[in-house]
Image 1 (cartoon, rainbow, N blue to C red):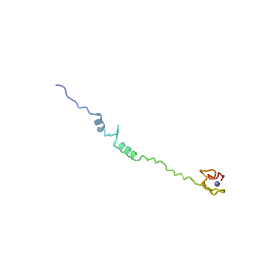
Image 2: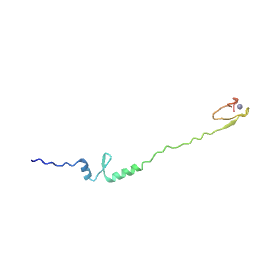
Image 3: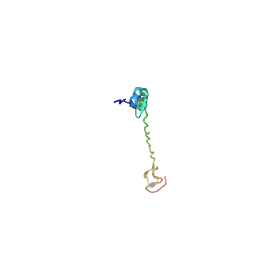
Image 4: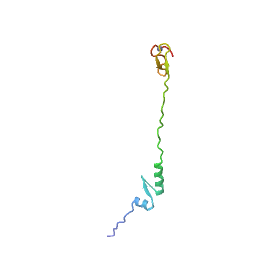
Length: 84
Ligand SMILES: [Zn+2]
């Protein structure tokens, strides 16, 4: 005889006895947990800014052959090669 088992308190039980709560891998106070949960919920979602690029289409009519062409894509008449 003379052997009695003393149940050792686990680390978790000790922390809980201190009034701490587990949050992830940490032991924190309930107030801290509440604060962190609120912070977590309030993390702003970074949205990618949508940029709509409106390409201006400038149309030209060739004074030689009358072909209408986009000056942004063609620096000269695509039909007869005349400069705008
Ligand atoms: Zn032309």
